[in-house]
Image 1 (spheres, helix red, strand yellow):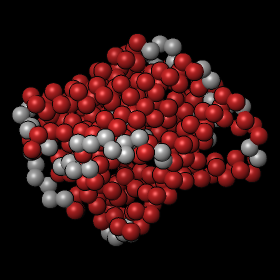
Image 2 (cartoon, helix red, strand yellow):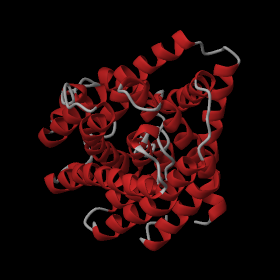
Image 3 (cartoon, helix red, strand yellow):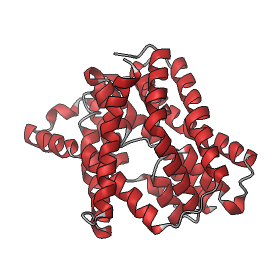
Image 4 (spheres, one colour):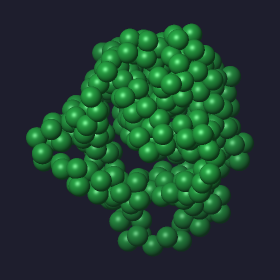
Length: 318
């Protein structure tokens, strides 16, 4: 696998995001529609997609793999927060200027909607098993996000654990229970087909939604560019954290699926969701927007580059 092959797998992802951006700018997707689509994806489509990948997944039949994947997601997020804060302080980003928001938005990579189609494209023969491990890894990340990250932004831990009760989390836990007990064999075929069809809608709709969200955020926030925020986020997201992810992947030799997940996550730009978190929990949305846009633009080149390097170093190429 070479750079061009990986680029071919990544470009459709960004093209679908671009379609979402244009549809929002042209008014095809309105603000009200965007909110409804978010609820549809989070509460219906994404949980269905998860339930097609975890039950019956042989890679998740060992408790050790589940525990390590979840722990890796949690600890790597905390590591990202710590390193982002160090870089923020080093770049002289003060607390009043959004140091906490910088730390959270830089530490949280796009951990779902972009990695999913990339994994499906890069590892077609083992995509289902790898995606199941990805969801467990993401559960650990979300545990850190809804607790430590929210505390950083809001200054209080009130209600943190309650926010963990959502559609994807419930689907992951239910999927693991079905997988360990083999009860998924008792689900009627008609219900399985409905879940599969709904799940298959998740990725294209979600990528369009990502683009639409970017468009609405850009139009609603007057950007005040801060070079220290932009360059600091690029340093963390595309230099420091990729090395950390790949180093951890190299150590976790017991699961190639988890290694693949970590290599893909290593190459991701910053997530969009911290913009929403900053807006609702007392952060600085303008800082989160800058982090997201800067890393997303650079990811067009650096995401394929890091994927190529990580897959080569760990000998995970097809």
